[in-house]
Image 1 (cartoon, rainbow, N blue to C red):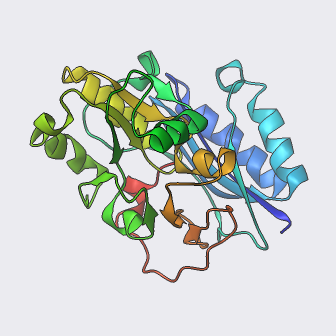
Image 2: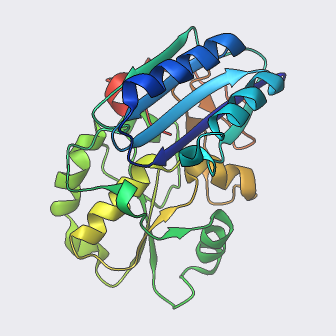
Image 3: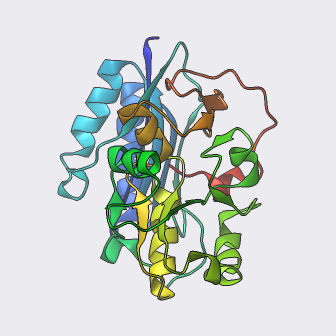
Length: 258
């Protein structure tokens, strides 16, 4: 499979959005890349596909900007480019939650590495003996493709419904270690910060999301495929295209998330 698909994000304050959009668009067009880049005052969220040389050229250029020097994308492979065109868009949020008080660019929630989560699930508790609850922060059409089967799943129609779902169910998490997860980390990062703002303790995000878990572990405890927001629809535990035939996701512009 000759095509490299990358997804990456970073929460960081950006105040030069129109100029940044043009620079990134011009660079992608010069490299003949396709995909989507979302820019907002809170950061960047990107999904791009191309040859190894094309992707390498883009990442080298992106990292010349000190704000993005530490971005490490998640990668998967495919036989063809799963995007029809290039889009570089300005938005209010790179992942829509509609809670302006949640500002990940000011500081991340604690994260747990994929290997650590796998070990916690193997042993049935975290390193301090607390029960571990997995919390799926994705939408219903995504969790239908694959998930950690023991995870709490609110069957969300949109990530904007997450705060209300948590508010109605806080008692479930008392005394537990909670690990929120999503496709690539962006939604579970906001979710973990929101839960901590509510005063909930021992809340973590899964570092790199499902994609990094599948990349860095034997994918134990995971069941099914992982929905992705492109023509592949889903990737298998091996990160190869899963070939799952599903209807197009609702509200892609709101819900697209790494």
